Image (cartoon, rainbow, N blue to C red; front, side):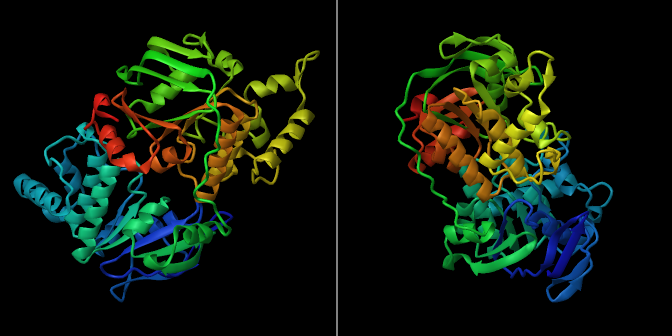
Length: 501
């Protein structure tokens, strides 16, 4: 890709970018959120059209104006959000849109080819299974097999391990190695530096829409990559403070909660968290984590069981009552659940109980001047990058929106913090800030319920790890990489609580 530039309204997403991909290699593409990685790959896959520059494939200029064009050149992309039809079978999804197979493809031939590819690359799937019945890991295998079925030789994998267990991630890496051994070339986008170091041959780093540099993976360190991404020194291994674990803050007894479909998603969970302790809940997405968090906060009704906060039964209390009792909630969806996108930064900072302290009790009017003063203080304390407290929060970057949420939730010194995927989609600099902020709350004596799909995040922050599988606690383990295989087995349902050390 030579001299690629792409403009959006007021934003230069790609600024004269040059990258090259060699046959039979894995090129990792790194960069903070907004660095231009996805835009660049969407140009290569034909979703966007570059404003300037050109793409050369095997030395010849490629004219790519749609994903269909890209596939003709052997370019395929597995995006973060799967593009499968749930009611179709694996085979039907894989051949969907392939005109070369005719109006009615020969089912046996298709299924046989899928099984052959699955066996060759260690990506086994049932070609006759309906997609809605499959696990997240199996769905991702289908997305990759779709590309291999078309004969794609340039594969773009965008955050491919975000929803996988450690064992599934390792199986994916092995499949990638087999692909490149067969002559394919892979562009691997990831926020996880450990993965980049393990699977890639070279790394290209983007920052602010430009290429900062390219290096051979064997000749660079994780700290070097982090510095290139952020433009400053980043401390990757943040030490957990020594904190004396105190009284029991949260106690959950035999809690059962239904999901949006009316099915039991939390099935008799019991656990406790003490002051100054971080309990990490590890599990593949969709195993009851969201329902558990919402039930503790009061957004979702408990079918049975009890939730106690500092010894007080709060099972049937409203959200506002729970806030006053000292619960803070950092939801996984910062744009739709945690904030009101069209409201200003200042208004988002004072949406909850803190605003009651700024109301004139005589006239029942909000003291706008005082809100702006307090908002400015929080903006400075939490290093929120915004030109004004009046700026609509939707115009901020993901990392700065998360800082707004943290400032609002933590400025009240809560006794319990529910943190659900607090760094999802954030770049490494913003992740470092979130880690430090949560550990400061731990040091202060808050109890923290941490729900995250990334084990490295759970290991960095947690004092204990509980693994959730199909709405139940499958077992506990120390936050130690030595237990990663054991935790991964529990996450996949292959190990029961009684077998956990």
